[in-house]
Length: 110
Image (cartoon, one colour):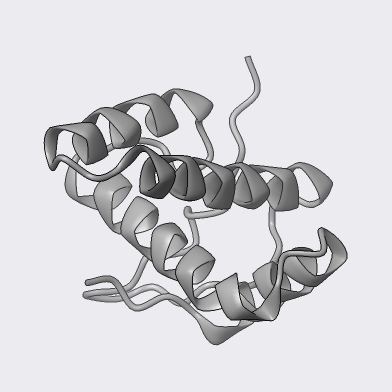
């Protein structure tokens, strides 16, 4: 698993609150975001590219996750994209082995 900076999860939590996601679901959403970021790192997909979500959802389907879980995962990642849309560089991210690196939140235009 990647080391994801606490500042990223803090900013994400603020967005979840703003979106009125029940506190009881915050850990699930953070889990899905962590899985998504790990998936993107492992399979060399862009973290901020919406095309990556399609590949992530295919992987979840292949793992026979329930439709409800797949929908929750997709919503969690969509919130992440929304967070990036407001600020493509939400937090300074450390470099290093096992780290997601500073390239994580960069949104590519085009």
